[in-house]
Length: 281
Image (cartoon, rainbow, N blue to C red; front, top):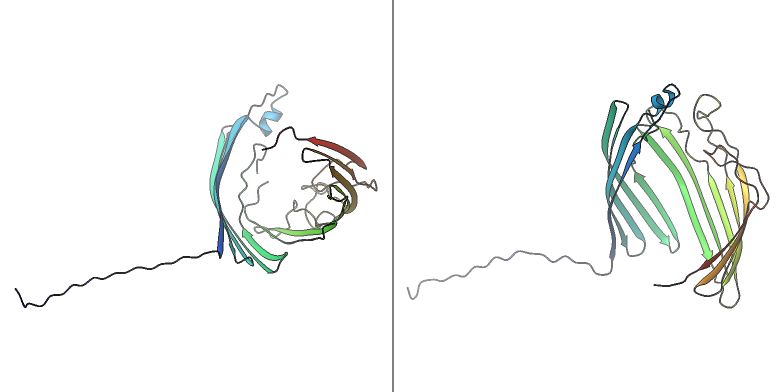
């Protein structure tokens, strides 16, 4: 009726959250799979068939990873991976799945220097040749260092790593963890366009881990000694399509065997190569 009170009421709720130029994302999604079929023929008494019977193994996995950078000083990488397998042969079968997380946080206080830490889980499915050598729970810890300096007419780099592994069920060290390794490279660029590059690389590798089972005392890999190597390298870019490279590995002709290998590595080795591009994108 004319003269009665009137009221209009509107309630609005909301928010606006946005960011420009501060966060950068690199999202990766993927998957993989493998199928192995093993057929064994044994007319010599069944010894081979008993150890490695005919059978099938299937592996599959899917993962998602997001790497976030904040204002050039902070890097955070998070990932999840789901793995699964099915193994059958010799009248028996097994299978399983596992979700493995990964988290890396890196801080760059000074441009060119990053300190980072990583926590990650992994899942290893047995191969068709494994009856039982998997470790249910293991922990790997170590330090990696990589640095370099480039002044235009030359460059120098250094990288090194040391890893310690432990079987969490038995408290013993893992036999297959590689020894420490360090490498330093010094290179120079020549000619006006820096098309000629030559340099030297020094590599030092430690002896195989101590206090672990080896092939000489009932299991594990063969023990190896520490060694040092000197390599020379050179490359020349004739143009955008033609380039050549040359290298001399193990210049001092050292006798050494890489960890987990049985045969020794070759002595001084000279290599040369020529690359020709017939088309460019």
